[in-house]
Image (tube, rainbow, N blue to C red):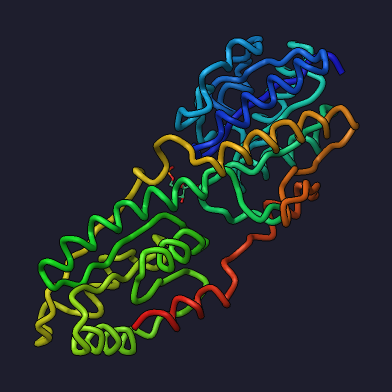
Length: 324
Ligand code: F6P
């Protein structure tokens, strides 16, 4: 194998640059040329790729986002779009492709590999941590720490004002971020898409907390909760409710995706980028590299994106037991 391409796709995640740097340098060490694809699949089917060498990825470990750019490409969802991408890869002499991204991106990678003759290896890069085949995905740790910093600030003001805050965090289908932020932030509850919510019980619990002398109450809500945090707040305390409980709603939004990656995300990116190059050199195809119990892992791409991973119920139980 003499030339491979690499792209980042879908929602950006802190640590994607560490993975890119690792791909480029591991390939360089093996005498393989790397083409960097601009703007994910949108760039792939348009042929936006150029050589990226070991120097070009210098000084990017600490930078959030992805220096290659990313996109959510609609064209690539069609077979025609993927055929265009294959044509472009042939024209540029690409013999293997590494895709760094989340479930939608890895699904695209899987289809591309299935329909074409260029081997594809995936690297889990998403703040959602919702892929099978890796205990953690690149970006999750940083996103949780970023959200946690905001939660700590909110707790300050909540405590001063004796208030309840509903804090919405990212995670459309999976409650990983909400669960970790909830435990680490000392929330009274974390509402996640994986579990139903008993709003009456939650209202009672919040009231009891204040009655027991708590000065603040934090309820973390995953965005996947129908209507998000605002809807939950309105359902618990409708406008005509006679409950006098001062509450506010905050959505942390895209700030969770930005910022300098944590040590964990940099190391995971470094490890998995290198493993992806090695996998291509070992003739692997349609797999995602990951880390399971600190060991490198290969998982079929189809399993990685189609079997969504969810936070274990024991963690939600822990949050519940500790929320007093
Ligand atoms: O996939 C990561 C993620 O941040 C999700 O948590 C969130 O639901 C989604 O992306 C937001 O996507 P966009 O940036 O396209 O609005």
